[in-house]
Length: 151
Image: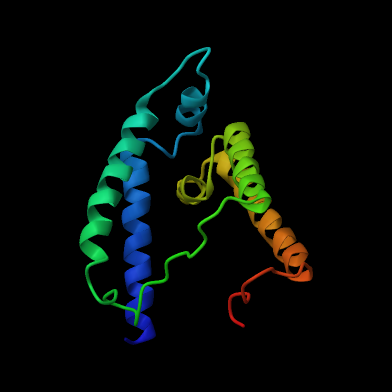
């Protein structure tokens, strides 16, 4: 498949994801922070969005994974990791802490940046700096049991 088709599919998937975030109100950091404020002004709407996403994924994966390959790739790229380790749990905790402090995770932050939300304008550069810093640190550490992507 030609690269422009893959790029177009990625663009359309990203646009659909962003539209879904906007329609569901998940680009509003106050909604996320309200969900995390279980002792105060709790907003359960994220549970419904999460439930819809998990339900859709459970059904769609059953159908999609019956195919021999995706439409635009020679094969599926699924994680083979089957155990929890300190690196995974630490990364999840760090992500959750950042999400709870800012009310943003990467997808909604990019959508927020697109609509010129002030918080997203602060969050996205900090997120990119963190990604660059992690990339530099991670390259220096030996990886156990698997080749690094691209090797």
